Length: 94
Image (cartoon, rainbow, N blue to C red; front, side, top):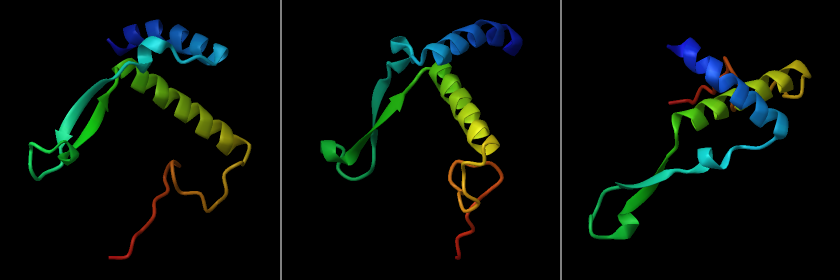
């Protein structure tokens, strides 16, 4: 099943990346209020969560991976860069 979807999505993603356009249909999100706690009648006790389509999330991950691979390839990122990089983490003292 994943190969079927990749055959459909790959040309769409490649065209989007070539043109530098993120399709408007993939920008549509459903906003869901999630309670933070406290009085449920107070709107300030809710936070919004945006639910995006799986296709937009997959495209976002592809762009992130391609960008990080390129930046790594050209040695753009400093050795001290830990955020958004693979196999690196910050050990916080407890």
